[in-house]
Image 1 (cartoon, rainbow, N blue to C red):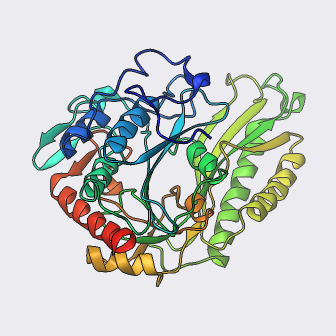
Image 2: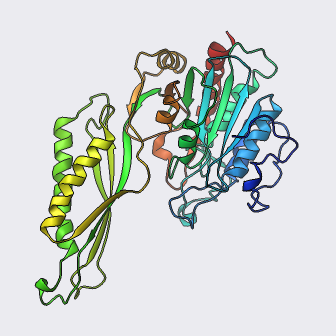
Image 3: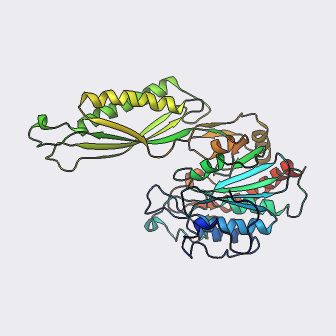
Length: 412
């Protein structure tokens, strides 16, 4: 991992990433951290989509460069961490102060893909309207970084008793590759971590894990006039889907956590593709599902039980079955609801802690030994859709809460 301050104006990952386009590695637009809204505008206009489709996937290095420049100007020591075997992808670890313990403010630099036609304005132009700031990533979650930097700016030149670290990761929206790389690294391990996902200022002490699985059935084709000429993969998939629905009901009957609005595990049949023509016996069928487990559930055991169950259905229809993860699963997350960081954020925000159903990078930071809480401005209701926005009246309260948190953990 590259360490230390990076020289000069052009903050870049090591040489193996220099095959990136000149546009991606342009000089940062500011030498000193600009005003908060200027930072937000600059981040929004810098595309950094991550996607499982290579055609839509983009580098996040330009965003990392920009954040690094701003934070370096405030006295942070900068580490850029290129992702292994992923040119154009990098994490940022920026630290102010020395010693043990301290606080991490963490977020991801990537956004989901977008459809220009469904936006009322350009996704890459920060637009203020009716007390809202619109733009791709404004809520989820580029908006968190200017807020965190603005809070950190108030301690520029101060002597900290414990370090403040700002972490920016890549590919949260597709594979969690940045968080996985971070969790496998030999980095300093502060005492507390806040993941700034949009929770509407509600401290989140638990969320479900999630995994996306692809289930493929391979039969054999033949003329549709005689079903005996082949093995119909769609017939087999009908039984497999029945087993999935029965498995879903079984999980709901045996696992429940009333701290969650949706108190049971969920299994969604999301996408089905099969066959090629009505007059041919269908020889292949592919189904993708989304499975969200409660804290305490064993991800590997659930997958194993599901594989055994589905194999029986496929075998009965003479079809081969393979079940593969679309990406590596993310474990459920939970931290004690009466932990110090949870209680502190409840007090500072005036909001009782709770849970959410969506996944975050929290488990990976927690794996490094930090007490971790999910807490940020904006609402998940505005994420992953056209005209994504961050409400203007949520920005200053967020700066104030993070400022107080930094003061209590790193200064007082």
